[in-house]
Length: 173
Image 1 (cartoon, rainbow, N blue to C red):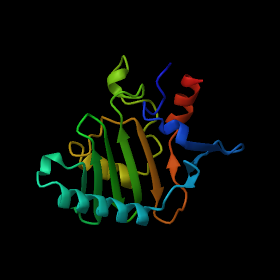
Image 2: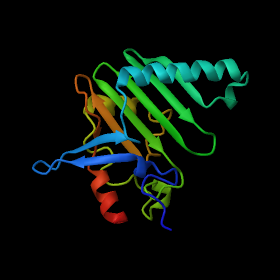
Image 3: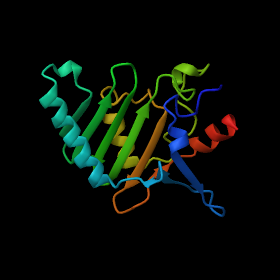
């Protein structure tokens, strides 16, 4: 059985993708038959998980969930790191929210590619304001280790996904 494009965690089976027929624009529709939560709810839940990790784990290095209210002015950051090479980073800014993840076993991983490069189109459509924050914190946010990236701009209710998904789906099909 071939690995899923988003890793062995089956995320591609949980994400429903809608491609607009005229524009080719890609929208994430549902996550496991539930509409993807908005950025404010996601921020609250990331903070709650980080607080619970602090309560239940005295050792900082054992904590999976982290949250910084001010990674830089007007930017909050939540992360999940399973300690086995997979992570998720969420940036909350005044201009929008970005979710960047990495599954070390995914065929989209730079480490699984012959050229060692980020999967084509991964960051191509991400708004510059969000990319600037990623680049400013390149080491902390593991810019090069990425197997998916989605974002929601400030006043938009729709989560966006770049053109990389079309290529990945075509390769898997």
